[in-house]
Image 1 (cartoon, helix red, strand yellow):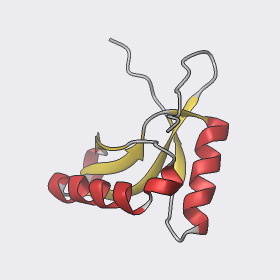
Image 2 (cartoon, one colour):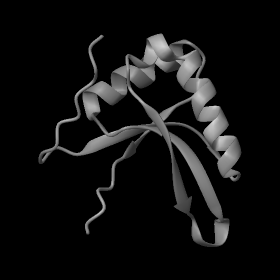
Image 3 (tube, one colour):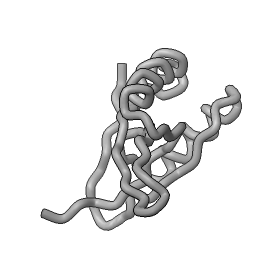
Length: 97
């Protein structure tokens, strides 16, 4: 199987977000379920959870893909949408040390 290669560079990277939960355990469980359900559509793009503090709106645990080039993210998300899965792109914010 071919794996999607993430290319670091000057071009911005994007993550595909499939869902968000307030409960970390529920987000982890759903990430596994969605990975299995959409395995052929994701084309070996791994899903993970990401903790986000939205200040007064609280903490959310997002189910996202690994960072991808925009055209790859758009392609995978459109395939997921055709199967009935909601998703959208989020610009990947690289954390500086």
